[in-house]
Image (cartoon, rainbow, N blue to C red; front, side):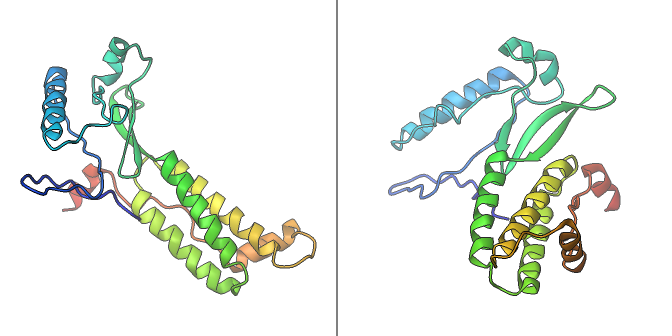
Length: 209
C-alpha cells in the first residue's frame, strides 16, 4: 500500500517542497508542544510557507488523555490520521489506556472507489484472472493494514470488494441476477482470501527476537 512520503528537512537557497507531508511529534508536557508549534510556524514562515491552520493541531494523547480530555471540553480524547490509520486512545478491559489503529475512513473510501473503477474496466476478463488480481489486492491490503485491533475494518473492506466484484460479474450479460445457490457455488470455486491480522502486538514481536 502507498505510504506517506518521508519527512525531509533541508535549508538553503532554492529549497523546494514538491510534496507536502505529515509530521507527528510527541511531548510529555503540553507547554513544550505548544512552544514547538510556535517555533515551527516561525521557521517555515522564513521560507514563505505556513502551517495549515486546520491540519496542525496540539492534542492530548497517551495514558492520561482520557483523564484530562475534559480540559479541552471533550468527552473523549481527540484522534488523528497518519500513514493511512486513524490513531485512537482507547480504554482496555483493565481500564488502562492503549493505542488502537483503524484504517482511515478517507483512505478506505478512496481505495474502494478506485477498485470499483478497476473492477468495472476488467469486467470481461476471465474470472480466474480477476480472482488472482483481487486476491493479490486483498493480501497487499492486509499486509499493510493488518494491525491488532483493526480486524473489523479489514472485514468491511473485504466484504465491499467481494460485493463489488459479484455485481460487476452479473452485469456481463442480460440474464437474471444470480441466486444464492449460484453465488455460493461461485464463491466456493473462486474463494477470496479472508481478512487477516498480519502484524503481531509489539510485545510479541520483541519476545520473538
